Length: 579
Image (tube, rainbow, N blue to C red; front, side, top):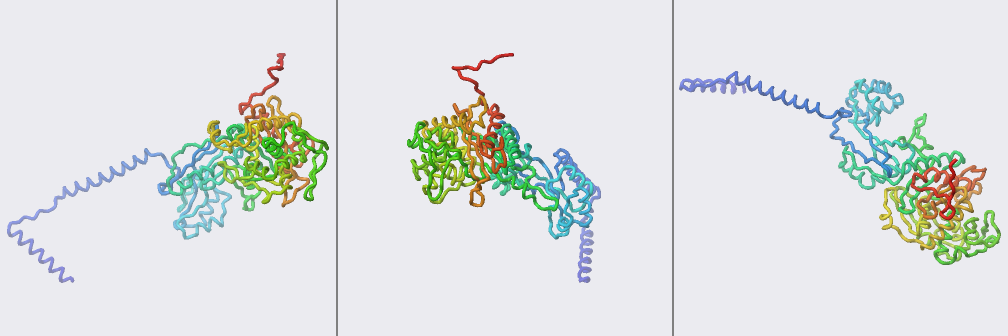
């Protein structure tokens, strides 16, 4: 091989000498040209570097530049606003801490340094992640800016930050069950946050089609001012009456819009879960996720008597002047049905409502019949799952086979369990002219509501029911909810609570359904108290618990809802005197 190379060099040498002898001149490279090319190359290199530096200088500073953010799109969620534009939920920029275990030199030293910034750091778990052979490990999600700065100052190799979005709820628990919350990855888990994902946002995000561009906000039907009042009242009532839970909802009778909805105990969506000192999850706190207004069903007690009387009136089996015999208890199928503080005499229909007669409403249901009774409640939407945007709505329960005893007990609110929200919506249909309008948590105009409304009772029936609710509000159990000037009508419901399939005689589920102003109802309010131990003046019935809650809510929120008080009439005006 060596000899072959030597021969080639010799041939080349002889060839050059031969060409030179023939007068062919061989030119040598010019050193000045080489230098010029080198200078031009360096100039171009420095120009490129300088241009890149200028570009970086003009670009907004990234929240964290320790990772290629182009590979990890930071997706934004739309802001959530109330009906007046008040902010309910928004995104804020944050960072999360991660490690690249393969680049970590000393895992023990890293854990010790990180613990100086994050005292609650799990040493063993963090050490395990740092010692793993993986390329990526999360260490802590959603750090504060101070934590990020302190960790950067430590200068730990193999540690970086990834920019993320964190959901922030300015009102805290005020509208927790309406707005809902998201998980650590900013995906909706409950309430309207989950509804937003169900409208296609989650699919777009999964497909990588979302980015950090601000999206159009989602406006809700609730009024944040009224929502605060409702939540405050039911929170105080639960404490005052030593109850297991309490709740309330306000529905626009003309549009079906939900103006406010609160269920306590609740939670702070900024901190949907809590960790105890021993590191376990606080399950008692997570019970606050349960929304009893739309996600739970209850036997609504005597509030159902309004539906029973409306059924009889609409079918023509009774009129407001009809009389039913309530002089003696009803014995049926081994059960005895009697009145609580009964009058033991025949009652007119307004008296049946006023004195909350089980015997009287049972007699009305008997006149209609089992099939007619079931059809009427189905028509009002009380036996089927409610249609609305709120995820996780509970399905009502009813007997598999309706017998006469079922129809009788259901007539006064036992044997069928519905959600408080759909009970309020059905009551709205009885007093708004007879139109059933599915509830909505999004703004809806009267014209839009008219397009989806379904006539479920006659206009005359609705007029009669307005009279009955107003009559009971003035003369019956509704007096505890009466607010001067706002013409409140309503009906109480005190039901024995069902526990493990049996009625507990000493534990109540109390509810009150109200409408105002009854001359032309605009709003329906439903309040409930679950298992109160006490009430106003020592009572435990709905008149002593749920009705006073309704009174407080209306007194504080009616003006905000645009309802003006009325004192006196044009025939007998109230004389105002200035002292």
